[in-house]
Length: 138
Image (cartoon, one colour):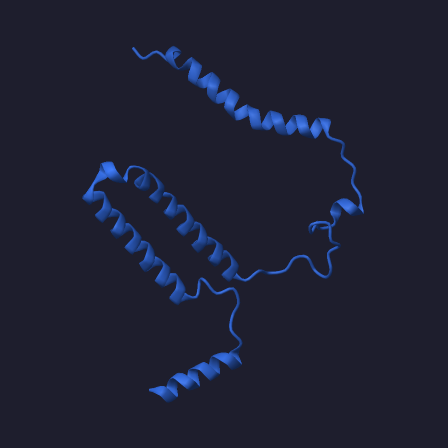
């Protein structure tokens, strides 16, 4: 009826591929020396002694900036194959890339308006001055 013997190599491969990370972790834990101490428990900050509490909160702006950069960086990688085969693709591909770049620019404008490209928040005093100035011009 249905023979499972044809999948023997798959099960062996699956077992080996699952066991390799556990085996590597076990071997490194067995071979490596374990010496505990106060130096091992301190935070490492590029060789500089940590000052104050090392568990500080980072603002979400840093992550948003990195995320926006990563998205646009990865998206521009898609332009490379197009540039390599530009002559063979013709006008249709050129129009597609113009639409693609237009969508990227729309996304960049949206991220810019949302403040994803700002490293730090403007002081409230400066914001109030800008609001007053914009109200006077209206």
